[in-house]
Amino acid sequence: MKFEEILICLDMHGCPNRCRHCWLGTTPNGNMPVSELAFAAEEFRPFTEGLQVYDWYREPDYPENYQELFAVCSRLSDRPGEHFELASFWRLVRDREYGKWLSSLGLKAVQLTLFGTAETTDFYVGRKGAYREILEAMDILIENKISPRIQVFVNRNNIGELGHIENLVRERELEARCRAFGGAFSCFLHQGSCDGKNEKWYDAWITQEDLEKIPPFFEAYTLRHFGKETLTDVFGRTEQALYEELIADSSTASYVSQSPVFNIDKDFNVYPNISTPAPHWCLGNLKRDGAGAVLENYAESRSAAQHTRLTVPLCEIVKARGDRGGRGLFSREDYIELMLNRYCREMGK
Image (cartoon, rainbow, N blue to C red; front, side, top):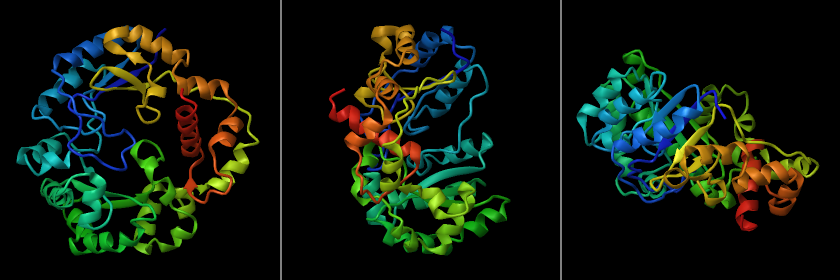
């Protein structure tokens, strides 16, 4: 059993936030020693031609020794590590060297997430003062010649606050300030996938009628970001339309890849990076079972979710857990994932 590449992500220190939209969930934070990175890497290394190692899957650079961890991950990986255009706004406002370090890595943009007003953003981030810190983080990024990219999760509860965010972008002159150092400001809307904590907002999911409430400002930026022609292309089709299509689909599917990504929680339980880390996706425990057994479970689709998708016709899953009259908008794959998670959870798998 040999994979082309394996990417492993350890939730070594967790996250300072308790976001009510997070598809990864809001499990308790851990405090793993650096040595666990080497342990995990050596467990998986015999089973792949190329290994990539990351010390986080929720909040990058949250711990004090973020530079050390990035260096260790790079050393343990078989090709140069990539920071991605993600960063900790919690750390940005508490460590002035952090912005400089991000810039030294060559980052040109960093994503920040807003939901509306200060009260609404603090509510969704799950931490009072988060909105204020996000605004401060914008300035710190620009000081270091890094463009802020504003992501807005939208549902029917906060769609009326998009005007506030538009005014914020204009008043802070984010586009002009980025352009002044040769950067490119961007922002976009989406509803996210309906899993993890975000599944709670299913009843407030965006509908086709709601798309008419999106200001032209955000429509233009969103279409540019996703390279789409209409907002329907971004937000997807109605559950009703997807339900009618999928109840005629008796196919099954495998989630096994030759280049898998695995999330490892603070207790060393391992999950494929397909959906929220939930019991029905668990592949085993790295400490107890070892990487060989975990990878065999993955390759043989033994997690309850993998096994269900591989053996139960899609039409049965959708008939059992879908809403024939649902008006929310979903991409096809996100809707299948929602149905699969519901099916596994409610069947006790």
